Image (cartoon, rainbow, N blue to C red; front, side, top):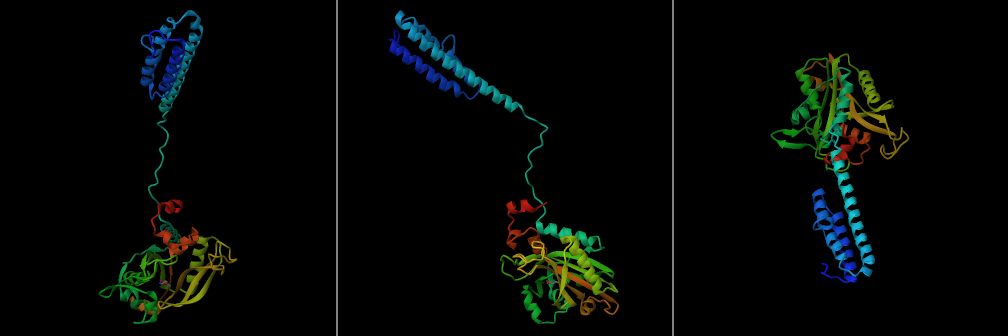
Length: 347
Ligand code: PHE
């Protein structure tokens, strides 16, 4: 505070002090009301601190007034400038908050999408649907008969060990493949039959980079009079061309108890165009499905006359196909429910 009759030194000190405090308070005023209060405190006509300074000017000896007057003007200028600057800043902010465009679309939060394996299944089903196939479903808990017996696995056949089945008691098990749906469909509907059966299957596999204990399969089945291996090859080749683009395919002899003859189909590796890369383990081919002519014993087990009817079937793994399609190094990423991954591939 300024004494009643200050020395020049005290006056100069007070002028600088008022300016310093005033500029600090004015430029930090959070809103127009606070700014007005600060203005009144420092620059007010009636009780402002600058007014006291102005009045004290008269108490100084005339030869000191020139220097003191300059200090007074300087303090007042600094305060006025701080007031103006703060006023502009605050009003600009207010204008900004009024520039609200109510017609602007909101930001979307990602609320989910189809899982990559589902996308692959849907696409496969779509291609076969055009060829007259419909979707059939079966239970995930099966009897030994539907999973093995009706499919021509002899009791204690080594192929049954191969499956490493999860038995759940009372002759019930978790189906190890979607092939039981073949039998259930043949029992229920009369030929011509053309179905696709997507669903989850279970095996006692360790959960590692290339195995999951529960995974999706898609079964295909076509049964009618006069169906031959030509139908199998033509249909699956057409499918491969539609799904993978114009790639080459090849059939390799294989074995399944429920098909005879049996074949596995490979498509040319899309990543290296057949030249050989790490994804196809240098072979240039990707194995995508197992297939074959339905074994007469399966038709008979389902109650059909195997002299009259023939058919072909296939089974493939959409997760493997999704891994190729999205270039995934580890199958577990499909089961992690990590939205950072799913957001990238889901549609
Ligand atoms: N069920 C077989 C498997 O799980 C695949 C398959 C289905 C093979 C239909 C031939 C015919 O490996």
